[in-house]
Image (cartoon, rainbow, N blue to C red; front, side, top):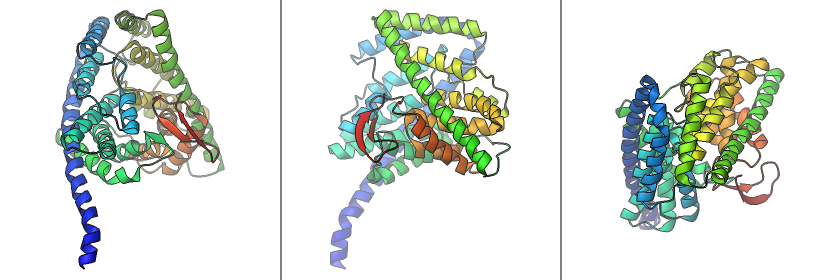
Length: 415
C-alpha cells in the first residue's frame, strides 16, 4: 500500500495542481470573455442602429495604432503571437489583454468586418500566460496554461466548449496532439463556458433540414462540395496575405494604411448598399441555412474581412470563415443537388477546417452547432477539405509537422 501511494502521490499532486490552475484560467478567461461579448454585442447593435458611424472607422483605426504605439507593442501582435508563444514557450505580454479588448471593440463599433474569436484566443492566452507567471510555472507548464487560455476564451465567446478543447490541442501543431493538455484544457473550457452561460450569453445553434441518406450519390456530393470548400479556404487565406502586402507596399505608414483601409470599407459598404458584411455577419449563417443567402455573399465577406484586418484593424478571422463557408456551401451545395441547409452546414465546417488545418476541431464544431444528424458527412467533409486546402492557413505561425497525403515529416509553417 505504501508503494502504491508513493507512486500515486506525484500524479495526484499534478492532478490537483491542474484542477486549481485550469479552473483559475477558466474563471478569468470566462469572466473577461463574457464581459467582452456583452460589450461587443452592444456596440454592434449600436452600429446597426446608427449606420453613419461607419465614417468614423478610419478615426477608430488611428486610435488603435496610437494605442499600440503608446503601449510600446507591435501592431502586428495577434493570434499568431499566441500560437508562437505556445510553440516557443514564450511569455505573452500582459498588456496584450487590454490592447486586443479595446481595439476589437473599436473595430466592431465602427463597422469593421471582423469576428470576436481571435480576440477571445488572445484574451485567454494573455490571461493564462500572466497566471502562469503568477504561479511560478516552468516553461512546459506555461505552454499548457496558454492552451488552457485558448480553450477557455474560445468556449466563453463562441459557446462551443468541446470544440474549444480540441482546437487548443490541434491549432498549434498540425499532426501533433498534446494529450498531456487534455485535462487542463477540458477543465478550463468547461469553467469558461459555465461562466458565459451564467452571463446569459446567447450562442446560436442551427437545425439542418433535408439531410440526405448515406449512399454513393450523397457521398460524392459531399466530397465534391468539401473539395470546393478547401479551395475557398485557400482563396480566403490568399486574400488576407495579398491585401496585407498591398497595404504595406502602397501605404508603408501604419496610420496612413489604417485610414485608407477604413475609407475602403466605407466605400464598399455604400457600394453594396447594406451592412450585411460589416461586423461578424453571423446573421448570414442563419440565412444560408434557410437558403435565403445570395450567391455572392461569400465573396463580399472575404473582401470585407481581408481588407479590414490587413489594414490594421483588430478582431478575429474564424467567425468570418464560418460565414464564408456557410454562404458558399448553401450556394454550391444547391448546385450539386443538396439542400441549401445541408450545404450551409457542410460548407461552414469544411471551409473552417481548410482555413485552420484542424479537421477534428471542425468535425466537433459541426456536431456542436448543427447536431449529430449529419455527423458522418461532416467527418467526410473535413477529411476532404483538409487535403484540398493544401498548406495554406490563417495563421503563419502554425506549424504543419506532417505531410497531408504522405507519411512524411515536413515541419513547415502554414502559408
